[in-house]
Length: 457
Image (cartoon, rainbow, N blue to C red):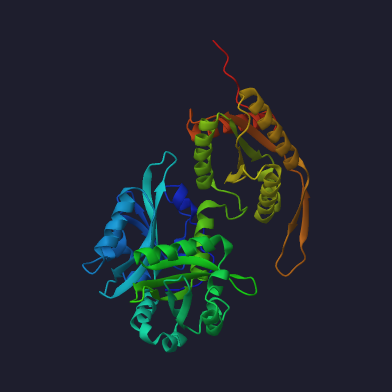
């Protein structure tokens, strides 16, 4: 299976739209993807998943996600997957699976539940990577610990022995030559001063690494961590460290283990995270992240008594711009509008591309007084209206030619809705702001409107 870092197509709609729109193309993703319904029956797979398992798409669709498991699959991991899915939690782990021809392979598996706006699970998305070669390397390391220094020269990582004595001092009896690549330090430097290994760990990861070492020593459990290393040139590298401790006769603890570079893997995970929660064009939060933050804001406001606000924005002249100048200019307009919106609100607020030329801004922690919070939200909305109404000067890049500058004007219609606590469903509040926005648009655009107050009959 291809193991490259090419950009995967947007899989965001998997987590937002339970109908899985036809625009979704998961065949460009270089790792196995399967989509299953709420009963964990597979409804879609990509080509990489078929290549990984040896089954054709027609042989996979409609089957349970566990069809690649067999008697040789670890029962504990199998049960952990089932339990996570039943409880609606994400599963991430390694499991031994089997191809169509009976060949065994190791699978790094992540399964994420897909929920609708009410929180109901409507399906699952699974991401699989064949890590057979990596598991083989790990096994080789364990088998060859007695000749670590010699064997480490041929491994894509660093093997080592690390000892802590009863008086708290430490040493590296054996350390592989790859320490120069992993830590930017030679084996001799680490042997002379073992604390250098911790000195090079990222400040945010250092305490966690030391705590895990202490726990491993006290309980004699595996020392197993992912952490960042800062190299001498100040670049950061993600590494995975695994070792098994044993108690020696003099009371020392000796760890036999290995460290490998997982920077590429972490990069892929971050890419998936970006695709899952952020709009690809503008970099703004998408609907999934918005509703997650909205629910959290409602809980916080319910406790604090403060109000929040949803500001629904629609660009008035977007369609004419698209029709006259083309999609490249339309996209540039959306990017510039997104930038202007982000610069107008606080870091604690959320700016969302809701779809097309629609944006949503969520304001957190306004006043605890309804009238004051309405005034605050209205002031922000008027500021957004003014900023979006300023003339645009858009630079359009042409392949092999000079850049083109397009100057145009585009106003916005804005609707504002106030919320406090969770008296209403998130969708109701959004719809209220949406209706106010359409009222502004019907009245000519370039306006801010709030929901009309109901008059007593």
